[in-house]
Length: 300
Image (cartoon, rainbow, N blue to C red; front, side, top):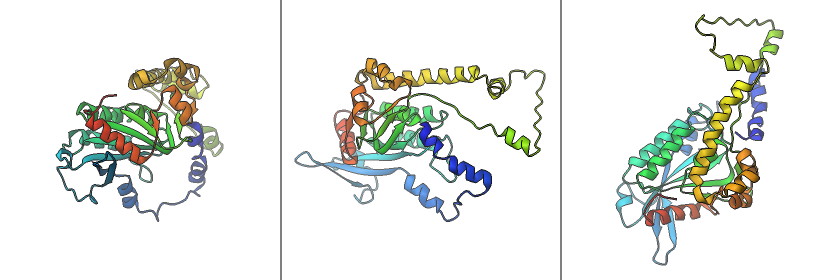
């Protein structure tokens, strides 16, 4: 996750620790979840080549649209906020829910393409690969996937997901792309709790001498073992980005610019490196879905 975004949550953490955090009692969780649920759009190619689209309900379609000459059904899914594996009670839907939605879309004969609307700083590693698997399942079923960064962020785990799409579009020059890498952070509150009189005791079985050894060492300031684990994950992340972007990625500039080391970029420079494909609107992203479907489906 991009560090500046992660640190923006520190006031909330402080509020939770002091009992002064804002309550969610007035929030309608059902409405929040409904707003984040996948939505279908029906895109229609006009006689002069223009593309119009409408929400599926507004188009009056209840089924069978993807096989119709009247329109192409694009399933739109949101990838928003900090990404966590499980659904958050007071936050965004989890990565596993998104992965399941993608798998269902891959099997749905009425769906022709998928559009991921992304505005996320990244998040948890666990669950990210399941979402990528869902993207690839759609592509294997001949359904192209387009990623759209909407006036925000496509960073870290969110870029890992977006890089798997057939096309990446961003809406504005100020969209922030990258943060390709792995980090871990945690707060050591034991000294504070110890000052309150709390005592900590840990007892391990004789056979469990390596259990939690990495983090026990890190707690004493030795981060080598934890860093080795992070390095292994980062190697996979970088490899996936190179594979997913293929010939569109300027491999020399990818290294020289710092993109491979976790740097972030605005749209123009991200385009020069090959991290994105175009600057455009939501309508352009729908149009790209239609173009890819008419060109024969998924395939970068």
